[in-house]
Structure formats: C-alpha cells, structure tokens
Length: 218
Image 1 (tube, rainbow, N blue to C red):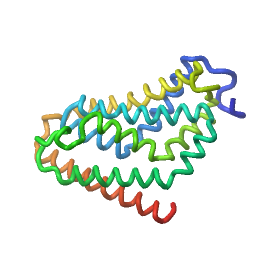
Image 2: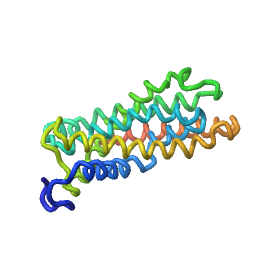
Image 3: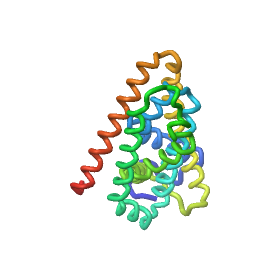
C-alpha cells in the first residue's frame, strides 16, 4: 500500500468498487471532447446511438485505472514517454472529427453515413482516452492518495477496481445522454445543425491547439 494514504488497511471489495467508481466519475465529469460529442449525438440521434460509443471511453479509463492500481511502473513510463505521439494522434483525431462534423449538411446524414457508427466511435473514444496521458496521471495521483492498489492483473482487487471505474464512467455518460436525449427530435434541425457545426469548429480549434503544444514541446 502507499504510505500516508487516506485509507489504512486493506479495503474490502465493495469499498474498492465504489471508491474506484468515484475516481472514474471525477475523471469523466469535466466536459471534454468525448462528453461534448456524446451530448451532440444524444441531441441529434437519441440516447442509444450516443450511449454505445461511450463504452470505448469507459474501457480506456479502466485500462488506465488498472495500470494505476497495479503501479506498473514500466507501463506508466512507456505511456508517459510516448506522450508526444499520443498527443499527436489525439490532435489528428480531433481535427478529423471536427472537419467531418463541420461539413455535414443534414441530420439525415446519421452516424453510419458519417462513417461514425457506434463501433467506430467507440474505438475513437478509446483512442482519445489513451492519447491523454493526463488521465493516467490523474488515476495515479488519486489511487496513491486513497491507497488503492492491486497485487497483479488477475487479482480480486483488480476486478473490483476495473469494474468500479467502468461503473463510474458509465454513470456520467448515462446522465449526459439522458439529459441531452430529452432534446432529441424536440429541437429544430437548423438549431441542431448549428450546434453540430459549432462543435465541429471547436474540435478543429482544440486539435490545432493540441498539435501546436506538441510542436512546442509542451
């Protein structure tokens, strides 16, 4: 266990689960590109077409969380050492997604015709999570503070931690899909088109800023 942690002793399985869920919820809650895209899809296409791709983001969070719990130093070093390439990939994905959203003309161009079907977007979300090493840093710091750890990948603690992370992340995505989905088919196509165009422009700007930060070595 980590020294001077918030929790002393060996936490029980249910406690590990809910603490991990809380950490994942805190990691997912800030409105970033994945949440913004999910909200846009929920408004445009409804709950389910927005929800399924978020499983990819939850899986990415689970990977980072389990790595943090294992204190797998060589994996952590490899990921953080590859920050340049990961950020570059993330920047390219944001720009490509932003251009596609910005250039769509009609709501009839649904997720499949966008080439953004649930499976493709799920993989895209997974990649976006892994391309952000700050997420791993957040899990490492949070788990160190709480004293959460696991002996090895197939240990009982790893399953509770991984399950808790998926539960916490999915709680956030279910919430935003439900709220945004209330507007599905209740908001005019013109307004939704403007929202989609605005989000596309925002993604292009975020991608360019991220690419510039990579070029500057920040």
